[in-house]
Length: 183
Image (cartoon, rainbow, N blue to C red):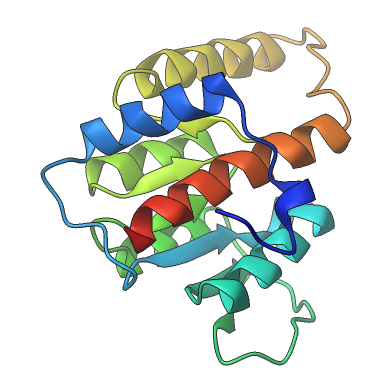
């Protein structure tokens, strides 16, 4: 696919393999252009939201940002913002409540990704990691282990700073996913 944003969406054999894996995982459902992109927006980097805005109008595909604090969005009929009340997992629960099979969820929240996968949705992190039925259990286990370590007083640090490589990985994965929706 050639587009004005093609420089943001480099191809890679690994990305192709991941996309094939996800589409195989979800081969029992119909992925149509009616799919919806749900964004766990409170912790989503601005660079990722900008990519999603361009994709929303280019395809077109509906993108909904869900957050507990107000955020500006471009004027577009394909982009919505849903503000929820503050609280633990309120945005996550709202996304899960509205998900349909074949929708895409953009989140760093591994339990939300696991719930999305259970509902036959596709989950992708802002760093371009695709969550699948094959890898979500180990990611949940690692998350729980690290949470236990932090609970015992150990300083575990956090993820490395978000960078250009992460942005490109996300753009590449999303472009391939959305391209598959069009076929």
